[in-house]
Length: 524
Image (cartoon, rainbow, N blue to C red):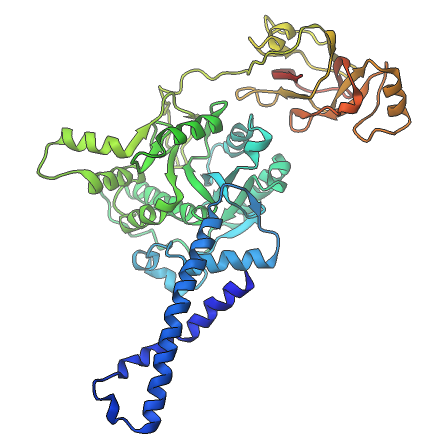
């Protein structure tokens, strides 16, 4: 890539020289010898510049393709950071923010985000934008993030980035949110799944003298205007990180399997014309855009950021694009529907009661969200099931193992277990145990190991001697192969263990909460 960057800067060096080509006249034969020599050198420079310009366009195309490639990568060295800066400066992707927000000219870095957490992940399929602001009553942010992460597979976690935008400039509040996300979701942060950013302190204009419109009081006009600026900033940051951008809010829950559902629907409508896909009926929640469309959309939002709420502005983009003033409203509605595809059932539900607008109670619910599925079933090998945990009501271990319900047990104590004894020994390839669910996210297994019982005595001896790196000995002939992390235990089973007679979940410390198993998958 170094030679490519060299060409970029070499071309820049020709700019002032090429401007002089206007000296060319039909009377060039009469020019003094010295001037003729300069003129000929300028012509050669111009020809060379044209060649390099073509090479530059080719390089930029390659860089742009790399920035939206489906495979994920994390920026981890100075060369990659330089590439990102070149892309930001040279690709025509920034709206004319300085026209609509002239105060930004006073500070050079006013559009540059402050990145607090994350690995600057790019090249993913889905970028989820979650703006968050100070709320007087209650924060829903951590619950929202836990809901989004809840049942993502390992592969899905590598193909997504959730950008939390703290839309405030108060350093104390910003630091509190950063610490909260880091403390509650450390693994997602360290893996690059979650990023946390905030704006420059110079980003927001003076919002104290806004014109009151649509009968809204001054405080509401200020709130909706700032919200337009919040979404715009977040979209600008997200546009280079992936192929599609999904706008969310900080007080929602996601339906289980939302990632897979969205990817399938995108593939279904990929070849058709649309501006955005709608995965929730409420306001601006769950709207998916191609990141290549974000510059145009953001420019429209900034152009009218003082005038109307953001969901109204989005509808106006559709009107401008397809509605014919000479035809009736029905025709306009049908034309807009072509550019706005709605997926049902909705994948995101609004749960926040207290709005970010002080004093406002927000009882919005998406009627198309339906009931949340609280478990995920699999076809597991036949087995006898036992547990020392007392079940709650009809939420038995047998029903969970058979994929028809979740298992809900009373507060685990040290030594409690779940034992799965296979009817016939199995060559187990992998396992997944997911505790908690979307509604009871706290009912998880803590300090609990996953163990297997090999049928071969020689395998047990090798484990005891430390000859197998995959595992270590436990009690009663069992071998420890994994443990729960953030409520989930997932992994492969080393083939060196041979056939497995049983699997066990063993609790190593007392818990303060009940435990819920929403997914059991034994891969054979």
